[in-house]
Structure formats: structure tokens, C-alpha cells
Image: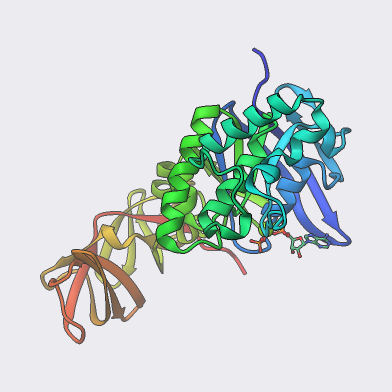
Length: 346
Ligand SMILES: Nc1ncnc2c1ncn2[C@@H]1O[C@H](COP(=O)(O)OP(=O)(O)OP(=O)(O)O)[C@@H](O)[C@H]1O
Ligand SMILES: [Mg+2]
């Protein structure tokens, strides 16, 4: 089988004694989008810089379309990149910005112009060539940066939080346009974000990084429904955390008389202490049974609301219709399902 797309093989990068990226292996199939998701400092930018060749790994390989590019410098890897804190050249026009990476490719001026026009059309900015960069909105500037990255027809597109300084409504629209442009050119893409919603909206596959290590890689639904660790369960989507004891293979006790059906990434034995995570939408109001608590907060999200419930075993969050409960009220909730992880031995 021909090796295509992007492959990272056991990449490791240290800065002095700090492990920025540790033994990272990932496959990105051709034309698909991998979202690299993780908190600040988890090694996302470092990973992109290793792919681009701006950093040399201490160990491991970067393979693009079957070619080991690890020994190559950035200029020979044929990637396009939008940097985390990117500034366009403010004194150049939109067209000059997009043409920037094409100058050294021996193209005729006519070829260059048509490539610029093509790239701008892909990000929905057809005809913007002679506009001043300073006269564009934030979202338009981000799209110019993307147009510049894709203009040389890269084998891999690397995007480092390209939407992070846009306001939410603009961000959502720009995100859709970005995904449409990526699909149209079919370029293998690695997209960095620290926001779960963005990773879910853009990524075909999501890789969760924590302190330079891969926590889990999978489709969005997989990460959401079958988190492999407590970290993923709470970092990807909302979840409350409780401690519990395994009753039998399928149930966990989280408080006296409160037992919930559970699933787990590893085999658990009765009596084992576990950490339990439960999604707000898995918790339902119930009459006089389940976990009892006082509603301390209600946050509206359209027709539904998130409620914070103060219970004897800690705070939990449940989702219900806005009028399901009032702040100050005593209610009971039960879980239709939860996730259990072996308690870490400190
Ligand atoms: N050139 C460098 N020299 C020393 N340490 C560095 C260097 N670049 C990154 N680091 C460290 O490596 C770790 C990973 O950094 P990186 O920039 O990859 O994180 P990140 O996931 O992109 O974070 P953010 O979401 O804040 O952008 C951090 O602890 C950072 O301080
Ligand atoms: Mg970063």
C-alpha cells in the first residue's frame, strides 16, 4: 500500500530538560483534517514546527506522502503554514501578500496572477487583490493568510490557531469557509486549537495532547463518548467528576444508595476505587431517588439550561429545560450512564 498523507513517527523534542513533545506518533490520511487539541503549553505549536522543519526532533521521523522529510529544511518540505500570531505584511496589498511565497518558484507573472486569483477565490475573497491589508476585517485577514499558505499548492497545510483572535460569530463563519476551502483543494491539514468546539467543527480526527504526550486520537464522537482518560473526559466536552466504587462490571456507586451504569476504557473489578465522569446531558431529574442536591446556578443556553447542583459528594452539572428547576430548589438526579477510570494512586 502506498504511503500517503502525513505520518509522525515517535517524534520527541526537548528544550533543555523540558519535554515539549514526547514519543508522538500520528497518521493523517490524505486530504483529511487532523485537529491537534490541548491546553496551553501541551506542545501543539512545537509539533507543527517539527512538521514544518523549523525545529529538529531529538528522535523520530516526519513522513510526507511517503517521503521521509526529517533531514530536509523547511524550504524543501512543501508545506503551507498559518502561524499562531500571524501578521500579514501590512504595507503590501492582498494580492502581494498572497503572491509572496510564489516569487521563488520561477513562475511567469501571468501564472502568478492566476494562482493568486485562484487562491483568493478558494477563501471567498475573489477580486480582493488590490485591497490594502489594513482595510480588511480580522476574518478577511485570516483568510488572506490562508490564501497565502495554499497558493504554492503545499502537500501539507499547517494552521496554528488561525481563528483565535476573531470574535465568536466571525470565527464560526470563517471556520466553515476554511473547511470548505480545505475540502476543495483536498490538502492534508493539521489544525491546532485549544478549543474543543473548534476541534470538533473542523477536525475529521482529533488528537488530544497533554504535556507533550498523546492522550487519545479518534473521531469526535469517539472522544466524546469513549474518552480514554479522565483528562480527555473533562477536557473534551463538559463533565462532572466524582469518586466512586465499582459494584460489579457494569455499575458504580457514587454515594450511599446511588449506583449508576458505567462504561470504562479498561477492565475494572468490584470494590475498585474509580474516578467517575458524567456528562450534563446524561444526568436526569428524578423523583426522590438518586443524588440529592440544591441547585446553586442556572445558565441559559437557548431553550435548555445547565444547572449546577451542590450535593453531598460535590458539585455536579446537569442539563435540562430552562424551567425544570429553580435556583435554591432541592432536586434529585440520576445518570443514564457515566464513565469510570481507575483512581490514580498518588
Ligand atoms: N524555543 C523554546 N525554548 C524553550 N522552551 C520552549 C520553546 N518552545 C516551546 N517551549 C516550551 O515547550 C512547551 C510546549 O510549547 P508549545 O508552544 O508547543 O505549546 P502550545 O501547545 O502551542 O501552547 P499554546 O496553546 O499556549 O500556544 C512549553 O512548555 C513551552 O514553554
Ligand atoms: Mg501554540
